[in-house]
Image (tube, rainbow, N blue to C red):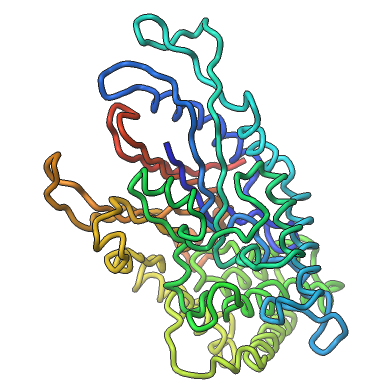
Length: 455
């Protein structure tokens, strides 16, 4: 049995809330039930699983959204950002500091996963003489292996070198990973053992960021930064801190705290609307609202003027973040009220901004040569199942399916009813995919599970 989950984004707490440890407890409870069900075989008998594998498909530790990136200004000694030289000593030191903070802030969550990988962490009832579960018998241990692949928010763990090996070692220990301290794979073929595991389940995986031009540069590859990193650090991470520094004496602490959830607002096009809603909820006067707008404009101008950003001053499509880029330019000319109206109009006209990457699955070699029955991406946070093809095989027709592993995340979602009133509903999402092989789960091939909850 193979379980895939992605986009958990557990962070250091400086920019946004991580999904709670309760999500990990729910997953651990559900895992035993999944293993028990998988132990029922196609012939109707019960034989306990000996092992199972969990694949963390990228964006697990949230390295990008941390205010630790902002400790030094441009030109200052020790200045480092995701797009500066990754071989510089200060770069590894920054990744180390953020990683330590993330692990400390999510120690309970990591411990829940680590416990699953330890002896006795997961066990099942033995089979009795009639090949049925025997609750009174001695528990049968199940070996749990945990694998980590990187995405666009944690690509730093793909970088080679002793300094990064030490950082990875801390992650391996914290989560009980099966990975070594060598670079965590970005593509499954970088890890022969993982590649074999996936082939056994007829699954092809990748994080999916390579199809997002804002968050992956194909010329630079995955050991390099992207425009999305610059936007995240210099605008989404910086704005709440700048508001607190420049306007903190004039604003209620609750408002400043709410701005740290910018990275969790959905849809992304509603980011300016979120800011406006917080101003309204706190009854901020018009002159102070103007200061907010001017500060946002200033940060946007600084972002666009960055030499790293100017390197991309050529025609290309930003796809999923087009709305964010549009927001940068609009705030230079429009009031928050006008921008509110534009966001509401755009959402009513175009609906959800979520997009599917299913068309990219049609071009994967594993799809074309039919070596994979399942093509799995993460990245978009939008869990979905899309039928791709079916072809004749020994057992009849074999299906090929695209699946997205969704996210584990805290969201503040714009309410559908009267969105002009700027009501945002908080909740936590959790999705995971399950794949079976041979006669497991009475012959079933896959399941997907998605839920939402509020602590």
